[in-house]
Length: 442
Image (cartoon, rainbow, N blue to C red; front, side, top):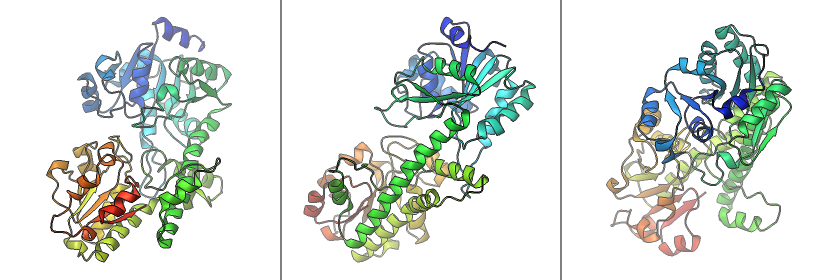
């Protein structure tokens, strides 16, 4: 069966490409491809599909482009039969015991298999540990389709590198790693992605290598941030400012520029567990990666404990204090709340019967309630605070002046009774000191 004419068919307009999964990853890919070729966008979430039909992009990844895109959005899986190139971009979360949750990938594989036509190339973008695509996805697709991989259809893998909320490092400007099960499929997959990736594609020799690229690159970032978090905890005990230490360090040419913080999201806070799972299947127990994860997973509790300590030292009874948290999403200027570690701050405070109020102009109130049991409060409806925790560096919070911050506190509080927890070190040290507020920052 011929597979090297798919690219030509897409460019000529007599073949279609399909996306399975239209979230933060799949949606931008579908919209970008649709600028050049015919695209079917499939998602099991009928509400999401209807929003896209209505020109609403809840992910905020493509913005107004959603209104003019030619993507054929659908929740009908049989439409996948019209495509000869299928990209699967579904979530890969972790379970409560930190093991990979492959249910979405397995479900997508079944859907693809039930609607696969001979002569199709299937490419997975979902982050998985090495071996999942060929050892788990392929057998499911073969069983559901009755078609043999390598003879009737082919498989490839290209790890997603989309950075939600990033308007600089966008889909087309990030080099794309690509792979296929054999030279023929790899070459065709590369040609198809080259339609949209201006930064170019980087082919690797096999699918397992491509799978490893993604989990390794994010594990590297996780470990570096874990080191910075340890540095922050040491600096806290030394009573010196972490940000000033790092600013000094970064004057050296080979400094890496990482900063401490709470590490959540769908990639950095998850992918290391996929890598260590692969290692453990081979009898190797991680000595660095898992310890880095432990450090980063502990930071929400550490920040909450610091807030409680500062409130006590300010003469408050923390249980009776009005605590406000600004920010819930896992990163700034992005509506994505997946695996938000702000939830760990909230959880620790609740353990001490402290019930904070949370505001976030980017987060979806319904998602916040469903995932974290949090009732978001509009910023303008927040009460006056005893303790303010600025947890996420949204531009709205970053741009606040000291005067605006002071106005958020109860007027009867003396300056040194107003507790500010500046998690992301958003505010200038000289202004913080001049304000007279009791502040702490990571």
